[in-house]
Every structure is written in C-alpha cells, then in structure tokens.
Amino acid sequence: MASAMRWEARDSFVVREILSGNVPDFLRRFVPVHTSIIDSTSGKLIKATFYVSPDYLSVGNNNDWARINISPMAAQRIADSFHCFLPTREMVDIIYEAAKVKLEPVPMYAFRDSTPTMWQHHLIIEGQRKSKKGLIAGIKKDIVISGKLSREKKNDRVAIYGWHMPDGKPIQPLYTGHINWWVDYSQGIRLIYRKIKIDGKWMDYIDVMRHPVLQKLICDEEFCDFYHYKY
Image (cartoon, rainbow, N blue to C red; front, side, top):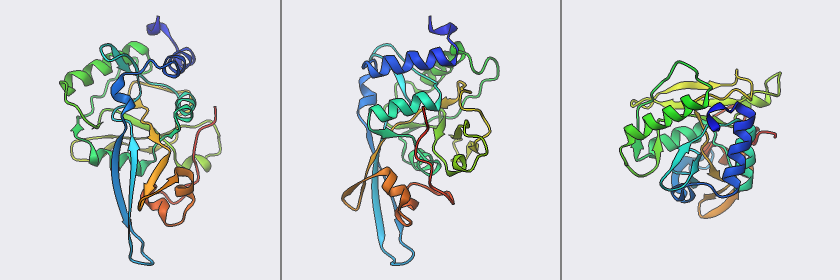
C-alpha cells in the first residue's frame, strides 16, 4: 500500500500511525546532548543540555520498522504532539559531534522521491549500522528551522541541512530552495524535546532562541527567529 503513495498520502499515513503509537520503543528514549558557550560580555561559561531522539523518525514496532520521509508540515504536527521541535543547523552539528554511531552518507540518484527508494535507503543504512546502538548521525539531511525562512519571499519553503561526511563536513549546506512539499529519501526528521536545561534551569526553546546571549547555544545564524512550520 505505502509503495504507491505520493507525498500527501504518505504524510497522512505517517501522522496517523505515529500519533496512534506505532513507533519502535527505542525512539521513545531521548538522549541528552551537551553544549556550552562563553558569554563574551561576562566571560561566564554557560552550559546547556537538550534531549534528542536517538534516530530519525520511524514507523513500526521493535521488530519491523522503517525510517520515514515526510514534509515539514507533517513533521511539525508530530513534533507539536510530542512537545518537541525541529533542530537548527547548529544543533545538527552538535548532534553529529555527540553521536556514538556515525555512518557515511549513501547518496541515491533514481526515483529520489518514491517510497520504494526511501525503503531501500533505510535498508542500506541498516546494513551499515550492523545493529550498533546509540545516538546515530550521518545518515540523513535534517529538515531544520532557520531564520532564512523568515526572509524568503515565498512562505512555502523548507530548510534542509546536514548529511555529514566522516570528516564532519556536511554534504548539504543550509538550503531553502525546495518547496515545502518536496520530500526525498535523503531528508529525515529528528525530534528535539522543547525544554532545554540551561545551567540547571529548564527553558522553552523559543525563549532560548529569543534571548540575545542564550540563543548562541543552539543557533549560529544571524537571525534565529523562525521557530516552527505552519500546517
């Protein structure tokens, strides 16, 4: 059934399945990722911990599951339902550095937006992973939130970034040229719990993004004022 789905049907299917609880157990256990900055004014070290899904969004049970590829609209709906948000470019880099399992990207070139290609890519990743466990990275480009989207003339864009090579350099620079319904095998969804612990105190990610100093913990762009996609 899923093999013939186009993006709208695939979005609806994935949202329905995930919100009904059809998610492997390992994705429910978020992983702490640590970062820090030095406040250039005070010289103070500021430490933060954010909590991330250990792998990209997937559908299925513990024995039969697959990473899925959906639009930012569907991803945002799922994120909101689980009190999460989508990462920034900076967070994608931090997650890659923290990952226990770093795998080399495997580009594919034919039928990039088809569900069978997405399934094949999942199987290729599993072949690389060889049952290694832990926070994984390097296997997908991330759909991200970015201040570039606030400055696009068109309000129907998606921001993508990442797919790091073993040397830590991403294949995909921050890019907002695709229309938001374009989804291919390479784009994944990483959920981040929306509360971030900063020097022992919890803050909502939007408050962090709006803070002139603390925003540097999770956002390296000139403007950090895009917080979520509309759906």
